[in-house]
Image (cartoon, rainbow, N blue to C red; front, side, top):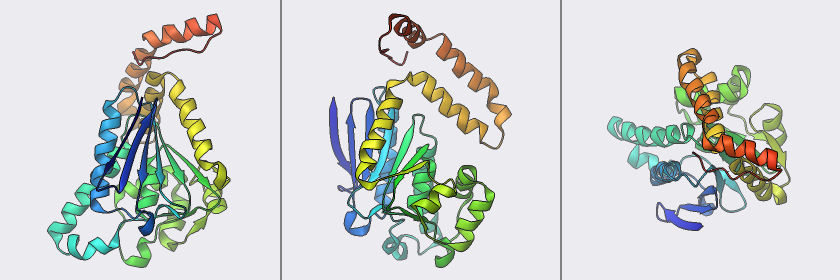
Length: 268
């Protein structure tokens, strides 16, 4: 079943087909800069995909030819971040959407081309997998703007690329090309621009075809293992693994293997 709708006055396009959902940042005239209503819409779309058992993977991409997401819409700052209360409200909503993406229980893939800057890089780092084209330019220019970069964003950057790379990214405010991003571990791989959408779609389909309880348990385990207190999550992760081993999907996987056919997993 295919579903399509828009949020944030059309600045977010939401699409689902089969087991894969897609969120497209749709402001190509502004290089897909994130307005505050887009952050709100992102959180809403993620909740809807999380509650939909048919969706097993989600792709995040940018509209147009020039950008994934070029960062926050700075033109809003004079109005929305001019007072302490305004800054707090803005940050709460932005950080809530960012946390919703990072804590989203199903696999997420950032399909990156062109500019992936500031808040765009935060979005990419909160995804599980990052695939980019050779047109990609990544960086966090906060040091050029006098902006502080919060703990959650620094932690995710450090978890993905390590403290030395995080230091280079944040201290230098440099833009890295696709090869530089790959060599620093900021992306999983680089593919030709013409192949980007098809490569990401193929990966999403491959993930979606696997046992969803197993994949979701693996994601939870990876996040726990890279969190601040991994041992405190051990019993919960072991319980998720046991639930997989006693599931109907596990029985289906064994039967399909014995019968030399493709398994049909139902998330139960």
